[in-house]
Length: 556
Ligand code: GLC
Ligand code: CA
Image 1 (tube, protein in one colour):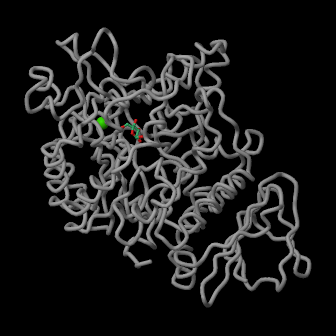
Image 2 (tube, rainbow, N blue to C red; image 1 turned 90 degrees about the vertical axis):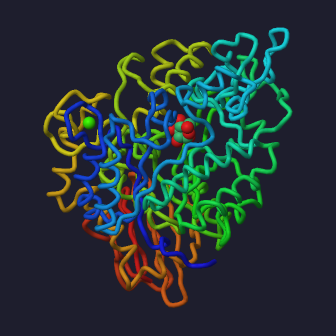
Image 3 (cartoon, rainbow, N blue to C red; image 1 turned 60 degrees about the vertical axis):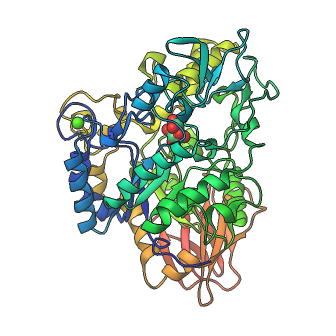
Protein backbone atom coordinates (compact mmCIF):
# COMPACT_ATOMS: atom_id res chain seq x y z
CA UNK A 1 0.00 0.00 0.00
CA UNK A 2 1.30 3.40 -1.00
CA UNK A 3 1.62 5.88 1.86
CA UNK A 4 -0.47 9.03 1.60
CA UNK A 5 -0.19 12.38 3.37
CA UNK A 6 -3.54 11.93 5.09
CA UNK A 7 -3.02 8.49 6.61
CA UNK A 8 -1.90 9.86 9.96
CA UNK A 9 -4.51 12.62 10.10
CA UNK A 10 -7.82 13.08 11.86
CA UNK A 11 -11.00 14.00 9.99
CA UNK A 12 -14.16 15.63 11.34
CA UNK A 13 -17.62 16.12 9.90
CA UNK A 14 -19.48 19.38 10.42
CA UNK A 15 -23.22 19.51 9.94
CA UNK A 16 -23.31 23.26 9.28
CA UNK A 17 -26.94 23.84 10.09
CA UNK A 18 -26.39 22.66 13.66
CA UNK A 19 -22.80 23.62 14.39
CA UNK A 20 -22.60 27.31 15.25
CA UNK A 21 -24.94 30.18 14.40
CA UNK A 22 -23.18 33.54 14.09
CA UNK A 23 -26.15 35.82 13.41
CA UNK A 24 -28.96 34.61 15.63
CA UNK A 25 -31.30 33.29 12.94
CA UNK A 26 -31.22 29.85 14.52
CA UNK A 27 -29.29 28.26 11.66
CA UNK A 28 -25.62 27.43 11.86
CA UNK A 29 -23.49 29.12 9.21
CA UNK A 30 -20.06 29.56 7.66
CA UNK A 31 -19.07 32.46 9.89
CA UNK A 32 -19.93 30.24 12.83
CA UNK A 33 -17.61 27.58 11.46
CA UNK A 34 -14.81 30.10 10.90
CA UNK A 35 -15.12 31.16 14.52
CA UNK A 36 -14.58 27.57 15.63
CA UNK A 37 -11.54 26.65 13.55
CA UNK A 38 -9.26 27.16 16.52
CA UNK A 39 -11.46 24.81 18.48
CA UNK A 40 -11.06 22.13 15.82
CA UNK A 41 -7.33 22.66 15.93
CA UNK A 42 -7.35 22.29 19.71
CA UNK A 43 -9.19 18.99 19.34
CA UNK A 44 -6.61 17.73 16.85
CA UNK A 45 -8.51 17.86 13.56
CA UNK A 46 -6.77 18.12 10.17
CA UNK A 47 -9.52 17.47 7.62
CA UNK A 48 -13.05 18.88 7.82
CA UNK A 49 -16.02 17.73 5.77
CA UNK A 50 -18.92 20.14 5.54
CA UNK A 51 -22.33 18.65 4.86
CA UNK A 52 -23.96 20.59 1.98
CA UNK A 53 -24.04 24.38 2.10
CA UNK A 54 -25.00 24.97 -1.54
CA UNK A 55 -28.25 26.69 -2.46
CA UNK A 56 -31.05 24.34 -1.56
CA UNK A 57 -34.72 24.29 -0.60
CA UNK A 58 -33.50 22.07 2.28
CA UNK A 59 -36.09 19.35 1.65
CA UNK A 60 -33.37 16.89 2.66
CA UNK A 61 -31.28 19.42 4.57
CA UNK A 62 -29.13 20.51 1.65
CA UNK A 63 -28.80 17.12 -0.01
CA UNK A 64 -31.14 18.60 -2.60
CA UNK A 65 -29.04 21.19 -4.41
CA UNK A 66 -30.62 23.89 -6.56
CA UNK A 67 -27.36 25.66 -7.48
CA UNK A 68 -24.00 23.92 -7.26
CA UNK A 69 -22.07 27.16 -7.77
CA UNK A 70 -23.47 29.17 -4.90
CA UNK A 71 -23.72 29.13 -1.15
CA UNK A 72 -27.19 29.12 0.33
CA UNK A 73 -27.75 32.56 1.90
CA UNK A 74 -28.82 30.82 5.09
CA UNK A 75 -25.25 29.51 5.41
CA UNK A 76 -23.49 32.66 4.21
CA UNK A 77 -21.89 34.00 1.06
CA UNK A 78 -19.17 32.94 -1.33
CA UNK A 79 -16.92 35.48 0.40
CA UNK A 80 -17.49 33.65 3.66
CA UNK A 81 -16.59 30.40 1.93
CA UNK A 82 -13.40 31.90 0.53
CA UNK A 83 -12.54 33.20 3.96
CA UNK A 84 -13.18 29.80 5.48
CA UNK A 85 -10.83 28.19 2.96
CA UNK A 86 -8.15 30.80 3.66
CA UNK A 87 -8.49 30.61 7.44
CA UNK A 88 -8.47 26.83 7.37
CA UNK A 89 -5.35 26.85 5.22
CA UNK A 90 -3.57 29.06 7.74
CA UNK A 91 -4.25 26.38 10.31
CA UNK A 92 -3.29 23.49 8.06
CA UNK A 93 -6.86 22.26 7.93
CA UNK A 94 -8.15 20.90 4.68
CA UNK A 95 -11.81 21.54 3.82
CA UNK A 96 -14.01 19.03 2.01
CA UNK A 97 -17.44 19.76 0.64
CA UNK A 98 -20.19 17.27 0.03
CA UNK A 99 -20.47 16.18 -3.57
CA UNK A 100 -24.13 15.37 -4.15
CA UNK A 101 -24.44 14.33 -7.76
CA UNK A 102 -26.66 11.29 -7.76
CA UNK A 103 -29.47 13.81 -7.78
CA UNK A 104 -30.10 17.54 -7.59
CA UNK A 105 -33.13 19.48 -6.40
CA UNK A 106 -36.38 19.68 -8.33
CA UNK A 107 -35.80 23.43 -7.97
CA UNK A 108 -32.52 23.27 -9.93
CA UNK A 109 -32.82 25.06 -13.27
CA UNK A 110 -31.92 21.85 -15.11
CA UNK A 111 -35.01 20.19 -13.74
CA UNK A 112 -37.21 23.20 -14.36
CA UNK A 113 -36.07 23.20 -17.98
CA UNK A 114 -36.62 19.46 -18.17
CA UNK A 115 -40.22 19.99 -17.09
CA UNK A 116 -40.65 22.64 -19.76
CA UNK A 117 -39.29 20.39 -22.47
CA UNK A 118 -38.93 16.75 -21.44
CA UNK A 119 -37.56 15.76 -24.85
CA UNK A 120 -35.00 18.56 -24.96
CA UNK A 121 -31.41 18.81 -23.75
CA UNK A 122 -32.29 19.02 -20.05
CA UNK A 123 -34.88 16.28 -20.18
CA UNK A 124 -31.93 14.01 -20.92
CA UNK A 125 -30.18 15.11 -17.73
CA UNK A 126 -32.78 13.10 -15.82
CA UNK A 127 -34.63 9.83 -16.11
CA UNK A 128 -38.00 10.71 -17.57
CA UNK A 129 -40.35 8.01 -18.82
CA UNK A 130 -43.90 7.66 -20.08
CA UNK A 131 -46.56 6.29 -17.79
CA UNK A 132 -48.16 3.59 -19.95
CA UNK A 133 -51.71 2.50 -19.09
CA UNK A 134 -51.25 3.89 -15.63
CA UNK A 135 -48.23 1.67 -15.04
CA UNK A 136 -44.92 3.01 -13.71
CA UNK A 137 -41.66 1.78 -15.31
CA UNK A 138 -40.63 -0.35 -12.30
CA UNK A 139 -41.45 -1.19 -8.71
CA UNK A 140 -38.47 0.19 -6.83
CA UNK A 141 -39.02 1.74 -3.42
CA UNK A 142 -37.31 5.07 -2.84
CA UNK A 143 -35.03 5.32 0.19
CA UNK A 144 -37.46 7.67 1.83
CA UNK A 145 -40.52 5.54 1.08
CA UNK A 146 -43.01 5.17 -1.77
CA UNK A 147 -42.27 4.61 -5.43
CA UNK A 148 -39.14 6.04 -7.04
CA UNK A 149 -41.40 7.45 -9.76
CA UNK A 150 -43.28 10.72 -9.51
CA UNK A 151 -45.45 12.39 -12.17
CA UNK A 152 -43.45 15.02 -14.04
CA UNK A 153 -44.86 18.45 -13.18
CA UNK A 154 -46.95 19.68 -16.11
CA UNK A 155 -46.91 16.26 -17.80
CA UNK A 156 -49.36 13.86 -16.17
CA UNK A 157 -48.47 11.17 -18.73
CA UNK A 158 -44.79 11.19 -17.76
CA UNK A 159 -42.81 10.46 -14.64
CA UNK A 160 -39.27 11.05 -13.36
CA UNK A 161 -37.00 8.92 -11.23
CA UNK A 162 -35.95 9.79 -7.69
CA UNK A 163 -34.18 7.15 -5.60
CA UNK A 164 -34.44 9.50 -2.63
CA UNK A 165 -37.14 12.12 -2.01
CA UNK A 166 -39.37 13.34 -4.82
CA UNK A 167 -37.64 16.69 -4.48
CA UNK A 168 -34.37 14.94 -5.39
CA UNK A 169 -34.64 13.90 -9.06
CA UNK A 170 -31.85 11.52 -10.12
CA UNK A 171 -29.29 12.80 -12.60
CA UNK A 172 -28.73 10.64 -15.64
CA UNK A 173 -25.08 9.62 -15.55
CA UNK A 174 -25.51 7.62 -18.77
CA UNK A 175 -25.65 10.99 -20.54
CA UNK A 176 -22.09 12.22 -21.31
CA UNK A 177 -23.29 15.82 -21.40
CA UNK A 178 -24.50 15.57 -17.82
CA UNK A 179 -21.21 14.03 -16.76
CA UNK A 180 -19.36 16.96 -18.34
CA UNK A 181 -21.49 19.37 -16.31
CA UNK A 182 -20.57 17.51 -13.15
CA UNK A 183 -16.83 17.47 -13.91
CA UNK A 184 -16.87 21.17 -14.75
CA UNK A 185 -18.47 21.94 -11.41
CA UNK A 186 -16.17 19.66 -9.41
CA UNK A 187 -13.09 21.21 -11.04
CA UNK A 188 -14.42 24.70 -10.41
CA UNK A 189 -14.51 23.99 -6.68
CA UNK A 190 -11.17 22.25 -6.61
CA UNK A 191 -9.58 25.16 -8.49
CA UNK A 192 -10.84 27.39 -5.70
CA UNK A 193 -8.66 25.56 -3.23
CA UNK A 194 -11.02 23.01 -1.80
CA UNK A 195 -9.20 19.97 -0.41
CA UNK A 196 -11.65 17.50 -1.86
CA UNK A 197 -15.04 15.97 -1.31
CA UNK A 198 -17.08 13.53 0.64
CA UNK A 199 -19.06 11.81 -2.05
CA UNK A 200 -22.71 11.35 -1.37
CA UNK A 201 -24.80 8.30 -2.21
CA UNK A 202 -22.46 7.62 -5.10
CA UNK A 203 -23.19 3.94 -5.47
CA UNK A 204 -26.62 4.85 -6.81
CA UNK A 205 -25.45 6.56 -10.00
CA UNK A 206 -25.45 3.29 -11.94
CA UNK A 207 -28.92 1.86 -12.52
CA UNK A 208 -29.91 -1.44 -14.04
CA UNK A 209 -31.45 -0.59 -17.40
CA UNK A 210 -33.88 -1.18 -18.98
CA UNK A 211 -36.25 -0.74 -16.04
CA UNK A 212 -37.52 -3.91 -14.51
CA UNK A 213 -39.29 -5.10 -11.39
CA UNK A 214 -37.57 -6.86 -8.52
CA UNK A 215 -39.19 -9.15 -5.94
CA UNK A 216 -41.64 -7.33 -3.68
CA UNK A 217 -40.20 -7.23 -0.17
CA UNK A 218 -42.67 -5.23 1.93
CA UNK A 219 -46.38 -4.74 2.32
CA UNK A 220 -46.25 -1.66 0.07
CA UNK A 221 -45.78 -3.92 -2.99
CA UNK A 222 -42.39 -2.38 -3.79
CA UNK A 223 -38.82 -3.59 -3.84
CA UNK A 224 -35.78 -2.10 -2.09
CA UNK A 225 -33.22 -0.25 -4.23
CA UNK A 226 -30.58 -2.61 -2.86
CA UNK A 227 -32.09 -5.39 -4.96
CA UNK A 228 -31.41 -3.40 -8.10
CA UNK A 229 -27.96 -2.24 -6.93
CA UNK A 230 -26.87 -5.80 -6.30
CA UNK A 231 -27.29 -6.45 -10.02
CA UNK A 232 -25.90 -3.18 -11.35
CA UNK A 233 -22.53 -3.40 -13.08
CA UNK A 234 -20.28 -0.84 -14.71
CA UNK A 235 -20.19 1.94 -12.12
CA UNK A 236 -16.40 1.83 -12.40
CA UNK A 237 -16.50 3.50 -15.81
CA UNK A 238 -18.17 6.56 -14.31
CA UNK A 239 -16.02 6.67 -11.20
CA UNK A 240 -12.76 6.24 -13.10
CA UNK A 241 -13.69 9.11 -15.36
CA UNK A 242 -14.61 11.30 -12.39
CA UNK A 243 -11.29 10.48 -10.74
CA UNK A 244 -9.19 11.04 -13.84
CA UNK A 245 -10.91 14.21 -14.93
CA UNK A 246 -11.20 15.85 -11.51
CA UNK A 247 -9.65 14.25 -8.47
CA UNK A 248 -6.26 13.07 -9.71
CA UNK A 249 -5.20 16.29 -11.46
CA UNK A 250 -6.06 18.23 -8.29
CA UNK A 251 -4.61 15.72 -5.81
CA UNK A 252 -7.98 15.88 -4.13
CA UNK A 253 -8.80 13.90 -1.02
CA UNK A 254 -12.06 12.02 -1.40
CA UNK A 255 -14.19 9.96 0.95
CA UNK A 256 -16.91 7.88 -0.66
CA UNK A 257 -20.24 7.04 0.87
CA UNK A 258 -20.28 3.48 -0.40
CA UNK A 259 -22.67 0.94 1.05
CA UNK A 260 -22.96 -1.79 -1.49
CA UNK A 261 -19.63 -2.51 -3.06
CA UNK A 262 -19.40 -6.09 -4.27
CA UNK A 263 -16.99 -8.66 -2.82
CA UNK A 264 -13.57 -8.14 -4.32
CA UNK A 265 -14.27 -4.59 -5.46
CA UNK A 266 -12.54 -2.87 -2.54
CA UNK A 267 -9.20 -2.39 -4.37
CA UNK A 268 -11.05 -0.64 -7.21
CA UNK A 269 -12.59 1.76 -4.73
CA UNK A 270 -9.77 2.49 -2.29
CA UNK A 271 -6.67 0.65 -3.52
CA UNK A 272 -3.56 2.62 -4.51
CA UNK A 273 -5.23 3.66 -7.73
CA UNK A 274 -8.79 3.58 -6.40
CA UNK A 275 -11.70 5.79 -7.36
CA UNK A 276 -11.53 7.43 -3.93
CA UNK A 277 -8.92 8.06 -1.26
CA UNK A 278 -11.05 6.32 1.34
CA UNK A 279 -14.59 5.20 2.07
CA UNK A 280 -16.55 4.88 5.27
CA UNK A 281 -16.88 1.65 7.17
CA UNK A 282 -20.61 1.20 7.71
CA UNK A 283 -20.37 -2.40 8.86
CA UNK A 284 -21.13 -1.55 12.50
CA UNK A 285 -23.77 1.07 11.83
CA UNK A 286 -25.70 -1.07 9.37
CA UNK A 287 -25.73 -4.07 11.69
CA UNK A 288 -29.19 -5.22 12.71
CA UNK A 289 -31.10 -3.22 10.10
CA UNK A 290 -34.72 -4.37 10.14
CA UNK A 291 -36.12 -6.09 7.07
CA UNK A 292 -39.28 -3.98 7.30
CA UNK A 293 -37.87 -0.75 8.63
CA UNK A 294 -36.29 0.81 11.68
CA UNK A 295 -39.01 -0.55 13.91
CA UNK A 296 -37.88 -4.17 13.56
CA UNK A 297 -34.15 -3.60 13.77
CA UNK A 298 -32.02 -5.62 16.17
CA UNK A 299 -29.99 -4.03 18.98
CA UNK A 300 -26.26 -4.46 18.42
CA UNK A 301 -24.30 -6.07 21.27
CA UNK A 302 -20.65 -5.42 22.18
CA UNK A 303 -19.72 -8.75 20.62
CA UNK A 304 -21.54 -7.86 17.39
CA UNK A 305 -19.73 -4.54 17.37
CA UNK A 306 -16.39 -6.26 17.79
CA UNK A 307 -17.19 -8.75 15.03
CA UNK A 308 -18.25 -5.99 12.63
CA UNK A 309 -15.06 -4.00 13.24
CA UNK A 310 -12.83 -7.01 12.81
CA UNK A 311 -14.67 -8.12 9.67
CA UNK A 312 -14.01 -4.74 8.08
CA UNK A 313 -10.40 -4.73 9.18
CA UNK A 314 -9.91 -8.15 7.67
CA UNK A 315 -11.65 -7.18 4.47
CA UNK A 316 -9.54 -4.07 3.94
CA UNK A 317 -6.24 -5.59 5.10
CA UNK A 318 -3.42 -3.75 3.38
CA UNK A 319 -5.54 -2.68 0.39
CA UNK A 320 -6.10 0.85 1.65
CA UNK A 321 -7.60 2.89 4.44
CA UNK A 322 -11.21 2.82 5.54
CA UNK A 323 -12.63 5.79 7.43
CA UNK A 324 -13.78 4.66 10.84
CA UNK A 325 -16.86 6.34 12.22
CA UNK A 326 -18.95 6.09 15.35
CA UNK A 327 -21.75 8.19 13.89
CA UNK A 328 -22.67 10.73 11.25
CA UNK A 329 -25.61 12.97 10.35
CA UNK A 330 -27.66 9.99 9.13
CA UNK A 331 -27.41 7.99 12.30
CA UNK A 332 -28.37 8.15 15.94
CA UNK A 333 -25.63 9.16 18.35
CA UNK A 334 -23.07 6.36 18.72
CA UNK A 335 -23.04 6.46 22.51
CA UNK A 336 -26.80 5.92 22.49
CA UNK A 337 -26.72 3.28 19.79
CA UNK A 338 -23.79 1.15 20.92
CA UNK A 339 -24.01 1.48 24.71
CA UNK A 340 -26.76 0.20 26.96
CA UNK A 341 -29.03 2.88 28.39
CA UNK A 342 -28.21 1.97 31.97
CA UNK A 343 -24.46 1.94 31.32
CA UNK A 344 -24.02 5.14 29.35
CA UNK A 345 -21.34 6.64 31.61
CA UNK A 346 -18.25 8.60 30.65
CA UNK A 347 -16.06 5.51 31.00
CA UNK A 348 -18.20 3.61 28.50
CA UNK A 349 -18.15 6.56 26.10
CA UNK A 350 -14.37 6.67 26.32
CA UNK A 351 -14.18 2.92 25.78
CA UNK A 352 -16.17 3.23 22.58
CA UNK A 353 -13.88 6.06 21.47
CA UNK A 354 -10.78 3.99 22.21
CA UNK A 355 -12.02 0.94 20.34
CA UNK A 356 -12.88 2.99 17.26
CA UNK A 357 -10.06 5.50 17.11
CA UNK A 358 -7.34 2.87 17.58
CA UNK A 359 -8.54 0.80 14.62
CA UNK A 360 -6.45 0.85 11.49
CA UNK A 361 -7.82 3.54 9.19
CA UNK A 362 -8.72 7.20 9.31
CA UNK A 363 -10.66 8.32 12.40
CA UNK A 364 -13.56 10.36 11.08
CA UNK A 365 -15.40 12.10 13.91
CA UNK A 366 -18.82 13.69 13.75
CA UNK A 367 -19.51 16.99 15.52
CA UNK A 368 -20.37 16.49 19.16
CA UNK A 369 -19.03 12.94 19.24
CA UNK A 370 -15.99 14.34 21.03
CA UNK A 371 -18.27 15.42 23.88
CA UNK A 372 -20.19 12.16 23.98
CA UNK A 373 -23.38 13.89 22.80
CA UNK A 374 -26.43 11.62 23.15
CA UNK A 375 -29.74 10.98 21.42
CA UNK A 376 -32.43 13.44 22.25
CA UNK A 377 -35.97 12.71 23.46
CA UNK A 378 -38.96 13.00 21.13
CA UNK A 379 -42.28 13.61 22.81
CA UNK A 380 -44.32 13.65 19.64
CA UNK A 381 -43.82 12.99 15.94
CA UNK A 382 -44.47 16.72 15.40
CA UNK A 383 -41.05 17.42 16.88
CA UNK A 384 -39.39 15.49 14.06
CA UNK A 385 -37.97 17.34 11.09
CA UNK A 386 -36.19 14.58 9.17
CA UNK A 387 -38.03 13.15 6.14
CA UNK A 388 -36.56 9.73 6.65
CA UNK A 389 -37.83 9.52 10.24
CA UNK A 390 -41.29 10.67 9.17
CA UNK A 391 -41.39 7.92 6.56
CA UNK A 392 -40.22 5.26 8.99
CA UNK A 393 -42.91 6.34 11.44
CA UNK A 394 -45.52 5.86 8.74
CA UNK A 395 -44.13 2.43 7.88
CA UNK A 396 -44.29 1.38 11.54
CA UNK A 397 -47.92 2.53 11.84
CA UNK A 398 -48.89 0.79 8.61
CA UNK A 399 -47.38 -2.42 9.92
CA UNK A 400 -49.56 -2.24 12.99
CA UNK A 401 -47.52 -0.55 15.71
CA UNK A 402 -49.35 1.79 18.07
CA UNK A 403 -48.39 5.47 17.69
CA UNK A 404 -46.48 5.31 20.99
CA UNK A 405 -44.52 2.24 19.92
CA UNK A 406 -43.91 3.66 16.47
CA UNK A 407 -42.56 6.88 17.95
CA UNK A 408 -40.33 5.03 20.39
CA UNK A 409 -38.97 2.81 17.64
CA UNK A 410 -38.13 5.59 15.22
CA UNK A 411 -36.79 7.86 17.96
CA UNK A 412 -33.98 5.38 18.55
CA UNK A 413 -32.84 5.68 14.95
CA UNK A 414 -33.88 9.17 13.97
CA UNK A 415 -31.35 11.17 12.02
CA UNK A 416 -32.46 14.19 14.04
CA UNK A 417 -30.63 12.73 17.03
CA UNK A 418 -27.38 13.71 15.36
CA UNK A 419 -28.73 17.03 14.12
CA UNK A 420 -29.58 18.77 17.37
CA UNK A 421 -27.42 21.85 17.97
CA UNK A 422 -23.82 21.41 19.05
CA UNK A 423 -23.59 21.83 22.80
CA UNK A 424 -21.06 24.61 23.28
CA UNK A 425 -22.01 25.72 26.78
CA UNK A 426 -24.70 25.81 29.48
CA UNK A 427 -25.97 29.15 28.11
CA UNK A 428 -29.43 29.34 26.50
CA UNK A 429 -29.82 26.95 23.54
CA UNK A 430 -26.48 25.35 24.38
CA UNK A 431 -24.65 28.46 23.23
CA UNK A 432 -25.44 27.48 19.65
CA UNK A 433 -27.55 30.53 18.80
CA UNK A 434 -28.74 33.75 20.34
CA UNK A 435 -32.09 33.19 18.58
CA UNK A 436 -34.40 30.17 18.33
CA UNK A 437 -32.62 27.06 17.04
CA UNK A 438 -34.11 25.45 13.92
CA UNK A 439 -34.21 22.14 15.79
CA UNK A 440 -34.65 21.95 19.54
CA UNK A 441 -31.44 21.40 21.46
CA UNK A 442 -31.00 18.29 23.58
CA UNK A 443 -32.03 19.39 27.11
CA UNK A 444 -28.98 17.64 28.57
CA UNK A 445 -26.80 20.51 27.30
CA UNK A 446 -26.94 22.08 30.75
CA UNK A 447 -24.51 19.49 32.02
CA UNK A 448 -23.15 17.99 28.80
CA UNK A 449 -21.33 20.78 26.97
CA UNK A 450 -17.92 21.79 25.73
CA UNK A 451 -17.37 24.59 28.21
CA UNK A 452 -17.73 22.23 31.15
CA UNK A 453 -15.69 19.47 29.51
CA UNK A 454 -12.85 21.77 28.59
CA UNK A 455 -12.23 22.52 32.25
CA UNK A 456 -12.54 18.94 33.39
CA UNK A 457 -9.37 16.92 32.77
CA UNK A 458 -11.40 13.70 33.03
CA UNK A 459 -14.03 14.66 30.49
CA UNK A 460 -14.88 12.74 27.35
CA UNK A 461 -13.61 15.72 25.36
CA UNK A 462 -10.20 15.76 27.04
CA UNK A 463 -9.99 12.01 26.55
CA UNK A 464 -10.61 12.36 22.82
CA UNK A 465 -7.84 14.93 22.66
CA UNK A 466 -5.45 12.51 24.34
CA UNK A 467 -6.47 9.69 22.00
CA UNK A 468 -5.99 11.80 18.91
CA UNK A 469 -2.67 13.11 20.21
CA UNK A 470 -1.50 9.56 20.84
CA UNK A 471 -2.21 8.65 17.21
CA UNK A 472 0.16 11.42 16.17
CA UNK A 473 2.84 10.87 18.80
CA UNK A 474 6.01 10.18 16.81
CA UNK A 475 6.89 7.42 19.27
CA UNK A 476 3.75 5.44 18.36
CA UNK A 477 2.35 6.83 15.11
CA UNK A 478 4.03 4.28 12.87
CA UNK A 479 2.38 1.44 14.76
CA UNK A 480 -1.00 3.10 15.22
CA UNK A 481 -1.29 4.33 11.67
CA UNK A 482 0.32 1.52 9.72
CA UNK A 483 0.73 -1.39 12.10
CA UNK A 484 -1.22 -4.60 11.60
CA UNK A 485 -4.40 -5.09 13.56
CA UNK A 486 -4.56 -8.51 15.18
CA UNK A 487 -7.72 -9.44 17.09
CA UNK A 488 -7.26 -11.24 20.38
CA UNK A 489 -9.57 -13.13 22.80
CA UNK A 490 -12.37 -13.16 20.27
CA UNK A 491 -14.09 -15.95 22.17
CA UNK A 492 -14.54 -13.80 25.29
CA UNK A 493 -17.85 -12.11 25.93
CA UNK A 494 -18.06 -8.32 26.21
CA UNK A 495 -14.34 -7.95 25.73
CA UNK A 496 -12.93 -6.22 22.72
CA UNK A 497 -9.19 -6.39 22.30
CA UNK A 498 -6.63 -6.17 19.56
CA UNK A 499 -2.94 -5.76 19.01
CA UNK A 500 -1.51 -3.06 16.83
CA UNK A 501 1.82 -4.36 15.69
CA UNK A 502 4.71 -2.92 13.69
CA UNK A 503 8.19 -4.35 13.18
CA UNK A 504 9.45 -2.74 16.34
CA UNK A 505 6.46 -2.37 18.61
CA UNK A 506 3.32 -4.06 19.84
CA UNK A 507 0.45 -2.23 21.46
CA UNK A 508 -2.57 -3.84 23.08
CA UNK A 509 -5.93 -2.11 22.97
CA UNK A 510 -8.38 -3.75 25.36
CA UNK A 511 -11.81 -2.78 26.60
CA UNK A 512 -14.13 -4.44 29.08
CA UNK A 513 -17.53 -3.80 27.61
CA UNK A 514 -19.64 -4.54 30.71
CA UNK A 515 -20.18 -3.41 34.28
CA UNK A 516 -18.61 -6.50 35.87
CA UNK A 517 -14.82 -6.73 35.94
CA UNK A 518 -12.94 -9.25 33.83
CA UNK A 519 -9.38 -10.43 33.89
CA UNK A 520 -6.96 -10.72 31.02
CA UNK A 521 -3.61 -12.39 31.13
CA UNK A 522 -0.59 -11.11 29.25
CA UNK A 523 2.16 -13.59 28.53
CA UNK A 524 5.00 -11.17 29.13
CA UNK A 525 3.32 -8.36 31.01
CA UNK A 526 3.51 -4.86 29.63
CA UNK A 527 5.95 -1.98 29.58
CA UNK A 528 3.80 1.07 29.73
CA UNK A 529 0.22 2.31 29.99
CA UNK A 530 -0.31 4.72 27.10
CA UNK A 531 -3.91 5.50 27.91
CA UNK A 532 -6.37 4.46 30.58
CA UNK A 533 -9.96 5.67 30.70
CA UNK A 534 -10.06 5.20 34.48
CA UNK A 535 -7.61 6.49 37.05
CA UNK A 536 -6.00 3.22 38.08
CA UNK A 537 -5.17 -0.25 36.86
CA UNK A 538 -5.42 -3.54 38.81
CA UNK A 539 -2.49 -5.79 38.04
CA UNK A 540 -1.37 -9.01 39.62
CA UNK A 541 1.75 -10.38 37.99
CA UNK A 542 0.91 -10.65 34.34
CA UNK A 543 -2.80 -10.45 35.00
CA UNK A 544 -4.86 -7.33 34.65
CA UNK A 545 -8.36 -7.06 36.01
CA UNK A 546 -10.26 -4.61 33.90
CA UNK A 547 -12.90 -2.76 35.88
CA UNK A 548 -16.36 -2.12 34.44
CA UNK A 549 -16.03 -0.29 31.11
CA UNK A 550 -12.32 0.12 31.52
CA UNK A 551 -10.25 0.46 28.39
CA UNK A 552 -6.48 0.43 28.17
CA UNK A 553 -3.86 1.04 25.57
CA UNK A 554 -0.67 -0.71 26.61
CA UNK A 555 2.77 -0.91 25.13
CA UNK A 556 3.85 -4.53 25.44
C1 GLC B 1 -26.68 10.40 1.82
C2 GLC B 1 -26.67 11.50 2.85
C3 GLC B 1 -28.06 11.66 3.39
C4 GLC B 1 -28.97 12.04 2.28
C5 GLC B 1 -28.85 11.06 1.10
C6 GLC B 1 -29.44 11.65 -0.13
O1 GLC B 1 -26.96 9.17 2.34
O2 GLC B 1 -25.73 11.22 3.83
O3 GLC B 1 -28.13 12.59 4.43
O4 GLC B 1 -30.29 12.05 2.73
O5 GLC B 1 -27.54 10.74 0.78
O6 GLC B 1 -28.61 12.66 -0.65
CA1 CA C 1 -27.11 31.81 11.04
